[in-house]
Length: 143
Image 1: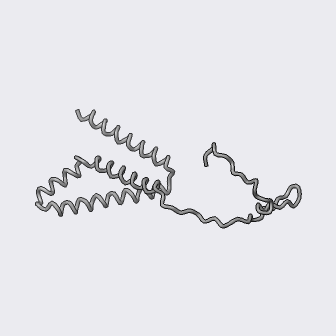
Image 2: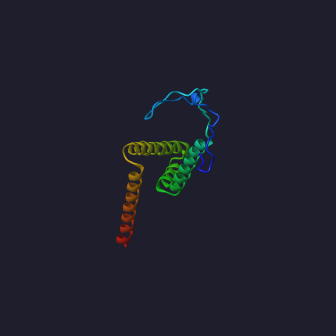
Image 3: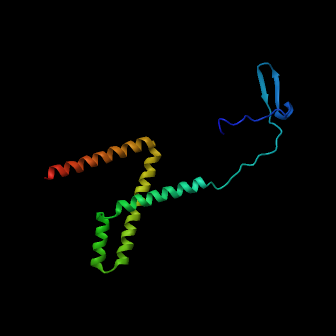
């Protein structure tokens, strides 16, 4: 409801239609109003479909970009070249990626049921910060 919308006009409704009965000065008895039954409107919400598509697209792009040129892709490339069976390597690597993604989703939903989103967000941030610091430490100490 908009805050600037006009209030509903009920001036044409009688007291008997509203069903308000005054018993004494401090006690109100609200009886059901005589009104046609209202059926809930159930419609496919484009907002819900859009959010599913947005989540899918964001997930796809993020994982796709994260996986380009990483050690998994390079390992798959080498195995495909050595085995001369690219489709078998493809099926094996796809099954492995699906399995690891399934584990991530199951673990994520388990954590989401036990912790608040704010706690999960802060924990992920701290873990990424710690990993970044460890990587920087490794780079600086290796030279």
